[in-house]
Length: 464
Image 1 (cartoon, helix red, strand yellow):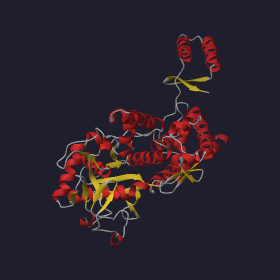
Image 2 (cartoon, one colour):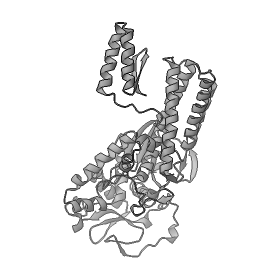
Image 3 (cartoon, helix red, strand yellow):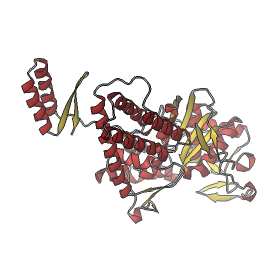
Image 4 (spheres, one colour):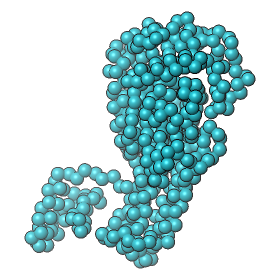
């Protein structure tokens, strides 16, 4: 596999630190509100990355943080007059519901910042031990950018142009240089009851220290891949590197991947423009998680994505065509086993799909391979050349592709109790060889909008 590494600014062959295993850290949400579709562009990209790594044979351990303590969560809790946990928990739960709606695989770990304060304090202590941190007059602790030689390597900053040695006030915390950033913030009356004891007094962690501490806890001091939106590259990811490498003296992350911005109708998302949408907003408009996911994966992750309702309608049409083709394959295969080599046209499209995935997650080309498979399969069927074995191979190929895309499989609607009862009655009729009753019950099921198919494994029900 090849990835464009933001650290080196070139596409590189991916080599994990341990053969066959990948440690993956993905920046998660700040749980002060419902996540919007711009957020989910990044989360879906990270899901495709994970699935692609697994498609290529890697065993992945993924960590996604939940930022539940920062200015926004504290302000929200204070405005509602509730505890920090009471304020953030509903948004955490909503986030996990949204992940399911979009077909995003669960990470192995979802560490919340408030559960890892000791790890953050210990990391700050290590920075003091290495002379990279200092305490301000109010008890806040800052990272000294000037004392860390590697600062700016991710964002490719011009360090000569950075200002140092000027004592300034920023965000109500005094620091020595404009580029220095807080790793521990002294308690302020606006924080209310949100504070923890530390060697430097009561306070709370800075935002950047959270990800450094939690990623290293679960993945080690050096790991394979770190991702996030392009807006996280600086200062957040730059500061993560400084904190981690400053404390350990080891390379922090081998490969950095960043997802480009999402725009809506060609403009930056803004509530004032009326183009700001949460996932829930789109679901209320009648779109499905599957359709939304299709739009979010259709472009290359490093290119800005223009999200439109026309794109959602196009996704609906594309998925309907795929669904129709899948039903055709299922009918043609009729329980045929997947044996031997796939037909040339199936193997060709699967190879094209693999190549696209391996080429820095080129999902536009991967989807193009899917649609070429659909087109060729429909042509074979129209010409009467689609044999059951070929149909079975094409179905298997779609399944392999969907292991990465997770949009191709038709969603299975819950079977209504009335339909299930008729199907059970029909199964009994067939067992007693009452074919007339079987046909009558099949028609009754059809009248309710469902189709029943007899397979070697028994009856299969599906929406017509």
